Amino acid sequence: GAVVSQHPSWVICKSGTSVKIECRSLDFQATTMFWYRQFPKQSLMLMATSNEGSKATYEQGVEKDKFLINHASLTLSTLTVTSAHPEDSSFYICSAKKGLGSETQYFGPGTRLLVL
Amino acid sequence: AQTVTQSQPEMSVQEAETVTLSCTYDTSENNYYLFWYKQPPSRQMILVIRQEAYKQQNATENRFSVNFQKAAKSFSLKISDSQLGDTAMYFCAFRSSGAGSYQLTFGKGTKLSVIP
Image 1 (cartoon, helix red, strand yellow):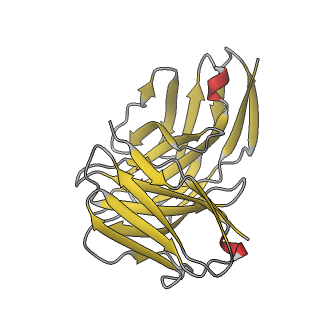
Image 2 (cartoon, rainbow over the protein chains, first blue to last red):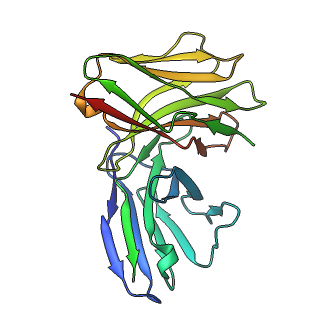
């Protein structure tokens, strides 16, 4: 199988605080992980691509200082939303890709963030 | 840049009937991958089917099949014998086959409702 988990599944925080979301590949090593954002009734928008042991590559318009991504191991990537504001409220989804030659991304169940 | 277009925001089908979801894409590449993902109310993204552009044969997975028309850049999904559990958002996605090009480009999605 190819199972990806995310923690937490939902989080509510006050404006100005930081929130960390974890993405784990449970039964495979993920050389590359991706972070997406999904607004209600909209499609997934890629935020950044994360390769193990190197800096993440951010999509145009995504603030790297606000959305900190760390991919410290082959099974774990973290997204930290720093100084969160209400406009950061969204559904964040991660996905993971197996090694070279694998073209399929396996998605986590998502994390719903609400910033008050 | 690649674009993916899903022209049907919403569709409905009677249980046990067949429905086809449309997807067109734009690319200048010759080799690439196409995917259909399903996102049920739980919001977990689930891979339904994938197609490699260099393969002429249409992919099939049980009740799900695609009609891949490379020249027309069309990639429709046919769901046969629709079941209530097929109710979900369906996203068409494109991925380049170039080295390091692992990002998925998603369409805006089609909301499918299966009616009892």
